[in-house]
Image 1: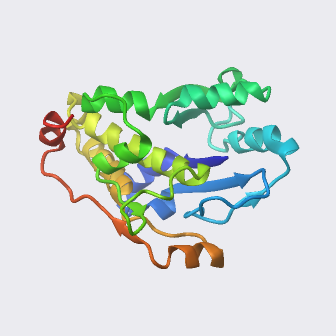
Image 2: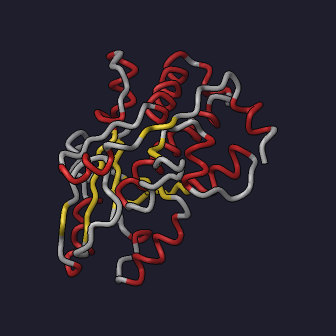
Image 3: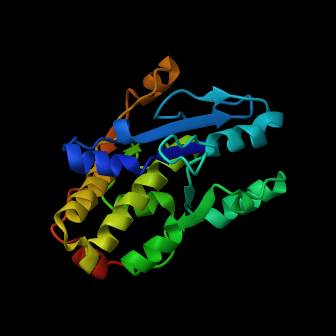
Length: 231
């Protein structure tokens, strides 16, 4: 199970204090494993191992974030982001956890649906979407994205895709005309397209990545033109 958290208060911090945006400082990544196997390496930290019986409680604990800035609210309100998120919600219901009924969940964002609306395209896999958005993604020597389908990595890249799609969409709206709004949107795209860092301290992960390379797609002057001519 992978969880990547973006605290939206960091948007205000960046704009008001002119702090350089980085994925390391703004995206908090966690990967939980409830099995004995290793699978694909987690790029953004070390895998936390838990017993399967703890899955529900681990998820609830991850979604319960104390809010110390609002006297009338004990926990932070959360918008869940996922790629084909209905599939994930269905999986959670199978283990007896209906995420949509939790009081802290106030909204859902599906990057698969957002991509169709923003890019005017058909359904895209997460790997294809990340590549189209110019988000650097680890590939093996054959050019195949081999680090997706690790839940922690998927969560991280899904959050980046959401930031890039939101930046593209709202930069075309009149609401983005103010200086602060424009800076916030630029921040979102900067974080989305940052060269993929490797946060893991696990020796096995670093050895496995020693022969990899990161391939990024260069920035385009007008992404609207690119996607207007794509499939």
